Image (cartoon, rainbow, N blue to C red):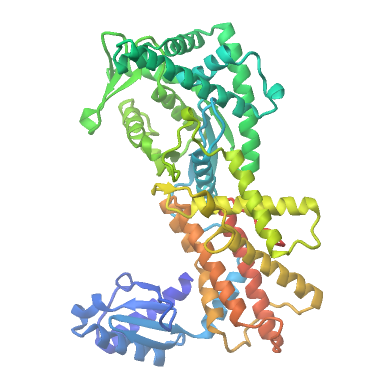
Length: 597
């Protein structure tokens, strides 16, 4: 595509010189795709040229267009709409471009001038609850961004920082200690992460009751929250854990083990993976060392109660607590240690944190604190800030049990996919095992596409009914386009249609064939744009556009009814390249494609 655009730009420069006597830099001539309601493939906006040419925009477009159709073989026609010159490209150019596309292997690295050694940190679950809908958006974003960057030839490492310590973990532990009566995942018949999450909710229930009781006795609300017995006991448990109390640590290991087993089962089900796991229990001590380093350098200071702070007011931020007065660490303590460990392990030139926008300030503080410490990797930190996922009823709250559970959601979309497939009645010839795999592929495709097609920066509303639709701007619509082509390929093999890649003697293309070639040629530009923006939404939109273009082509242009063997072979080859592109682009979103549906 770049070569065709460069050919057009060179021709436009020659036209400007020949018709208007003007030398125009190629950078001043910006081509864009022509709108669907006008004839043409590329459009030049002529308004910016009026001053230099001393002509109106329509006159400029007319003059350039007439010269191009007479002297530039790549241009077969034009039309001018006000200040827009729409160029129609010769079929020979499209065929040449298609030949270049066919010669390119699937997934060839896309030219990109961004970072070459990248760490993408995502998921970062707490070990006090199962994964929920918000985690799904995080996981799908992180996985997809990593795959998009890999497509540019970058070395990408996917890591997961597990929040396995802290006051929130102690709440689950204390809840289980008080109310669990020795229950296990085996005795309860539920996943370990769900069992632990149950006791986190129970802790919060009893804690709120204690707070209400204290308030009824006349204690101020803020004091009641701090002085409730369960909260004091949880804080004591945290101190015992940091002091390596044998009983507390044993309970911590047991309950974390249950959660890890549950989380890993969910990761496998949703199709995400990691190259390395980090654990806050293994990074907070290194973070404490960095806090001590900052004190020795005079970068940090202590308060009367012994707590350690960093003053970031000069950076437009505030003072930030780095270590509590009782010596226990806070979130940023371990974040300092993790950033260092990742740099030691990977030597990254970009470290992407996939974290919700509620942590925007925290991430600014982390980067500023690392700069205070003089760390060379401070500048490499990049926060991929994404909007939270809301429900029609409001925000999700784990402590109140008002979350959309990830495991349950996956089951629901699989059931919706099953119902839609059975309604269409196209399951003949598939075994029960193949059908279950198909339902999983379609359901997960619907869910991933729904969560990824929205720009990451935007807060989004999760509508369960809308998310499982299997038609329209959805993952299954794109998957179906691939499956349709797979069916065509099987028919080609069955009928013995001769396949070729030599279409030099083909003289005419249909408009939908031209459009589809132009769409396929846009792959590299789309991936580069998505990599720059760290936005899978760019890729999702492209996948949908390609699928729509193919379905228009399929509807308007005959394949097997075509009597010209060369035209038939070309349409089969065009279909095959489309299927290859759809499979590659959906793979960047973590979405699989079915061969039949």
